[in-house]
Image 1 (cartoon, one colour):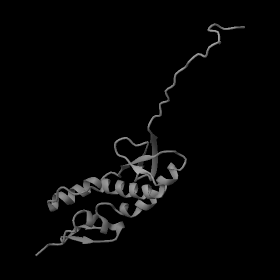
Image 2 (cartoon, one colour; image 1 turned 135 degrees about the vertical axis):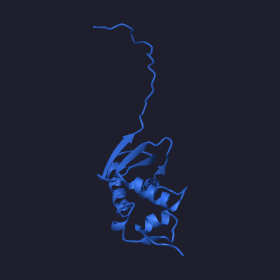
Image 3 (spheres, rainbow, N blue to C red; image 1 turned 45 degrees about the horizontal axis):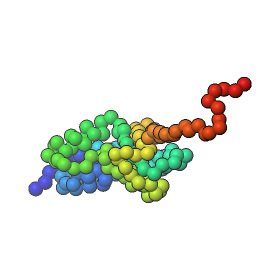
Image 4 (cartoon, rainbow, N blue to C red; image 1 turned 180 degrees about the vertical axis):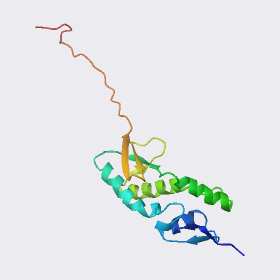
Length: 153
């Protein structure tokens, strides 16, 4: 009834994200057509993010992802071949998993609109770049009574 597409052998995470289609076969993460083992490394990337943010004081954060070239194209190829639409992408799933792990470990909130700290995770080079929201300090000077306006030598 269903033709198994060995061309699109996926790991468990990618298969679940595609909707567990019977036409797809299950393989180990390293042999996955879409992620090539990337989804199995999210915990290590999460720990790398935690090491990077430990010197910062913040209450909200957000995670951004840079994927290796070809990952999104391979996922789009699978979806177009099997005529699937409206599912979560690999990029958003990895960002969600890393955010959930970091939120639990730091007890900080995830804020996508105005985060105090943004971590950009390069999954190919396995590096983390941090950017903070600017801090503006506003003050007002008032001259106390009895102090002369002009300089005294």
